[in-house]
Amino acid sequence: MNISIFGLGYVGAVSLACLAREGHRVIGVDVDPAKLQLIADGKTPVVEEGMVELMAKVATSGRVSVTTDAEQAIRDSELSLICVGTPSAANGSQDQSAILRLAEQMGTALRALSRPHTFVFRSTLVPGTVEEVLRPILEKSSGKKEGRDFFVCFQPEFLREGSSIRDYDNPPFTIVGANAEEPVLQLKSLFGHLPCDFHVTSIRAAEMVKYCCNNFHALKITFANETARLCEALGVDPFQVMDLVCRDTQLNISKAYLKPGFAFGGSCLPKDLRATLYLAKQRDVELPMHAGILPSNRTHIDRAIAKVLETGKRRVGMIGLAFKTGTDDLRESPLVLLAEHLIGKGLSLLVYDPEVHLSNLLGANRKFIESHVPHIGGLIRRDLEPVIAESDVLVVGLNDKKTIELLKRHARKDQVVIDLVNIGAHGGLHAKYVGLCW
Ligand SMILES: NC(=O)c1ccc[n+]([C@@H]2O[C@H](COP(=O)([O-])OP(=O)(O)OC[C@H]3O[C@@H](n4cnc5c(N)ncnc54)[C@H](O)[C@@H]3O)[C@@H](O)[C@H]2O)c1
Image (cartoon, rainbow, N blue to C red; front, side):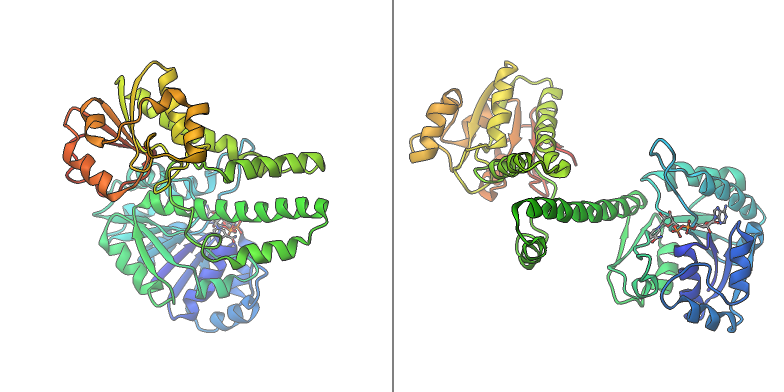
């Protein structure tokens, strides 16, 4: 394929070298003539393992050329990879000035083109940029229509500086955000041979995945470093602790706890987080990330309260009260907090939880209701049907198959169902469906 690559930094230069290695004809475009000269001389513009040898090799293949002329590059290629920098502006926003200028130039080049061209954005871009900002610029400056005369798509780059050729050859996955089949097929022919899954998504989901991955990496590093600071203060070996944490591939290094849903609660996580923070305070160790977890969890509960109040309805049926599905443990249940808040707002409430009924509750849980939330105890019903019958809005806080089936059978058209736990496909539900944050 004839490919133009805009921006010859870490991402662009490595892509240029690897695509040329694979037999494609590649045109490198950059505003920095020094970088172009280095590439023309068979040298690497970035310090990366393996790049010196690879650049020298591909330069002799005759498949690599360079130019500062963006319009010429578009004319001579069928697909462009856009890899220009998107640094932080002083206020923390993304500085898109380079890519905005480039989009204008690319649109002008497109004007004179008699065949379709595909623009693959590989720079990290805040979600919505390709469709809401770049596509309109391309359409305006070319006078052409996306999806017919040209295509835009977003393919996040996952390479890491220092090991970028290896990462190029072994990515965790290939993700292509696209609205049409043509660019997907083109990118499959370029990257489909790589030893990983190939996922096609919406353009903005692909933009979001890139941010989510980087934020997750930053979160992981900070978690390990905060843990190490506390370990140091306690005289514990942080490497041993984190190594063992990572050896649990059931709950720790796994998909567990990484699905969007409702706030956490229960008899362990909140109290242990609080104890950790207290311990850190006693030892003068600052743990801002750990300290942010409970307030963030509270914000999630506030979101649920707001969703219920936004319906404007006054009779609420809560399905679920325990802190998670399949238990009768009410201690620090976020659903109890939600119920208390709604009662406090003057709404009338009924509660159903298949595991929680006062007459069945034993020991600690019965005592908990009697001493902490006696006002909720009286609102609990043994069956779901009367709760549905007497409510205008139903808040689903448990994901129990039998309960959800009953809900689907009995909920009415005039009711709203607010789903806090992602009950999944809700076909067959007559009520209006509202997800907590989906
Ligand atoms: N560096 C990484 O490891 C990495 C990994 C994944 C994604 N990304 C993302 O990829 C993008 C590029 O990152 P990078 O580290 O390669 O950046 P970089 O700063 O190393 O390179 C950007 C290049 O773009 C060139 N450029 C600027 N304006 C241009 C224009 N109008 N036309 C042509 N060239 C232009 C610059 O001269 C520079 O050579 C960023 O959005 C970044 O967030 C980077």
